[in-house]
Length: 195
Image (cartoon, rainbow, N blue to C red; front, side, top):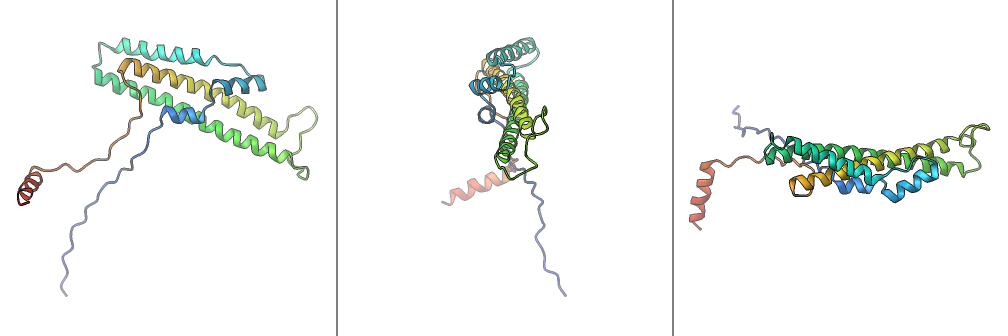
């Protein structure tokens, strides 16, 4: 029997392009100042000064850039600050997602309480909180934390824009493109000559 020749297999490496977390995504999942204040006041939690947190982080990143200014060129500074701001944005986004889940669980537990035929969701013994109340209080604490981290990320992004001169955006790795060889380019030019 004769074997048919097979074309050699090429193992192409596919790198999925993962979208980075943006500051806009943080704003969507973390409470803003008005909502965080409402939540804090409703649950007796401390009302944070979000503007002070933002300003502090903006100064922190700016002063760090000033201290590193002589040791880093512009591109190195941009890469360094891009990574720092990315960590703040990632942390705030994670806290915002956690906050969203906590609110969902609190809503579900509270909705179960409204059903009079369910015994397992009734209030605890006198002097103890119900599970739904604990979930609401936990969601409120997480809301304040998410707001604080949002404001830290906002300050870091503002510092990046001040130092680098452009708005911060997440780093997105571009998929590797196979490099065109000189012979391939020459062949394309030659073929184009034929019309």
